[in-house]
Amino acid sequence: MARLGMVVDADGHYAEIPSEWAAHMPLRHRGAVPKLAIEKDGRERFTIGDLWVAPQRSSGNSGNLAGNQMGKMGFGDGLNPRIRGSRKPIVQGRRLAQAHPGASNPQARLKFMDEEGISVSVLYPTLGLASIPGIKDVKVGSFVASALNDWVVERFCSADPERLLPVATIPLHDPKYAVAELERCVKKLGMRAAWVAPSPTMGRTIDDPANDPVWKKASDLGIPMTTHHGSGGGGLKALGRDRNKTWLGAHAMGHSFEAMAAIVGLYTSGVFQRFPKLRWGFMEAGTGWLPFWLHQVHEHAERMEHLIPDVKLGKDINDHFHGRFIVTAEADDLFINNAMDAAGDNAVVWASDFPHFDCSLPGLADELRGRTDLSAKRMKMLGVDNAIEFFDIKVPKIRRAKK
Image (tube, rainbow, N blue to C red; front, side):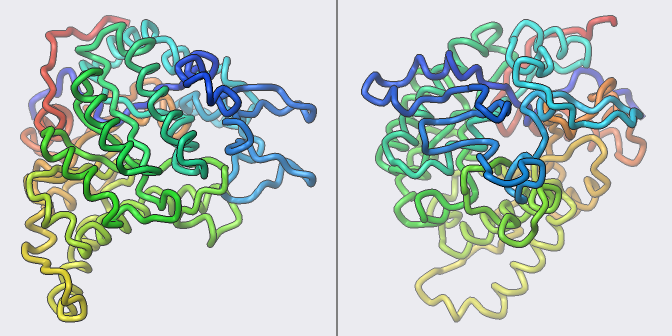
């Protein structure tokens, strides 16, 4: 098997610096800005005014928080990858300032990428991912997202715009605002993709007709939309959080279940059909569910389409996926071949999830390179070609640094 060289990371993360992020907010909303503070109980909390707080304050035992909260895990714990083979506990009470240097420092991130053999990283937020969808104030939710887009382009990805590619954060609080923000992010900030929450925003599901102008704008601009679930507090209504009292359970369910719900919602509401040129990515949800879910939706459409006479399903769900949609696989995903068999070789991209706690160092990308169950063709498509095609990436010539 040919050795896999430099790879493209289709779903990495950055850690926002709240004080810098807040500086991009309009003055009239400075009362509801992203902020990090140590409170009376000694906990480090990230707040957006009083609209979003994590970890949530509790009058009881703060070590036994509910499934949608971080419990004893500090932000620095969540932003330090596991040490491969180590039994050291993840939860050490580390603060955001103790996160992996590559989380917030772009030069440290580039150095890390050189050592790991990662040519380009497609980047999603961390704090914004968890908080923005749950904000209940329409204007604050919208402006916080715009400020985040400005911050990541100006303060993080400007270190190397060819290698650090931010995905635009698009708030669905106000679809009209979302359309304008999407256009601004692409035409002014140079972003090549966008993400929205798969979970409901302001009580509206992702497939709500009110969001159609957003999908039309993305289609007209020729950029892909992606969904990415975020784990955190703030009262966000997400699948799994109402069915399990542990963060472990809610986290295990949330990412995959929200992607599955988004797919069936966008299909049965006719979004996929109304915008046939729009590409979709369903990020950080794994792959093992994909063959089952495509078959499940296909079977139901075949037998029950007459029960939704207002929607013409047209293409089979499998046909939408082939050549148009992607899911992500981390290096230890056991079901990559199954997903490619079901949805096509170009339907799966490699994602590191760095610097979040559920990836492992050292050898983050080497774990992918060590796979022996994938053909040389599939390995290259997974680690390089599919991400290049989906995100329209021009990969610079980079050599892996010697450690």
